[in-house]
Image 1 (cartoon, helix red, strand yellow):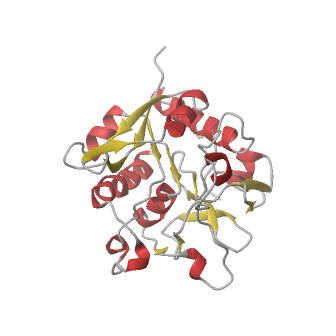
Image 2: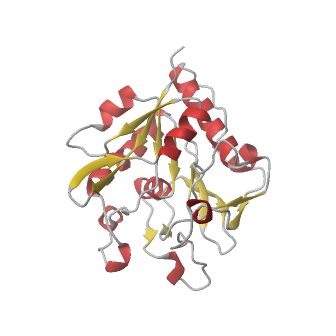
Length: 259
């Protein structure tokens, strides 16, 4: 039986300082294939090559990945500053309407890091350009040095709402996560429910209230060692179950998202 297809949103890079590419981290494909049980399909997130309607027809679900470029602040009514970093307007043009379409259709998606921020912006929310500059906030950025294992190491607790959606997935009120982001949620978008926070109050886990499909998104990077990590594995398993349900034409919600 054919596996359902998860479209993995790719990022634009210049390889060897001159060759334009679309790329995606292999850990995303590994998590989708080996934990979610779906077929990973890398998407060139650029409206010159794909349309949202085509993606909705070809894919059963979507993984909105992390990426170094940030959502352009014009997408939430603000002007760009040096603190906002680099941008990828082509990706913005695909992912933001894709999120809204998936919410309306009930088509499953999961957001990670930049993807988490895209979900908030798509629903009308805004972002802080640099979390570590805010009073009382910790530095959530990736450590500048060390091995991948050290950079993706677990660094802080995320506290989850009692009996909330993520509590149902993890069977716990607190989980340990990595942290590799500079930006974060400022104002929360319409119907966006913040279901988990870091100790400094930074939103870390969200879903869309009353959405007919899977919309769970996280600020950390659960794709790292997803097959072994006790937090990442149930999240990708729940996502895979939702994608299989969509592919099979089921309207049964595996996770209630109306809290």
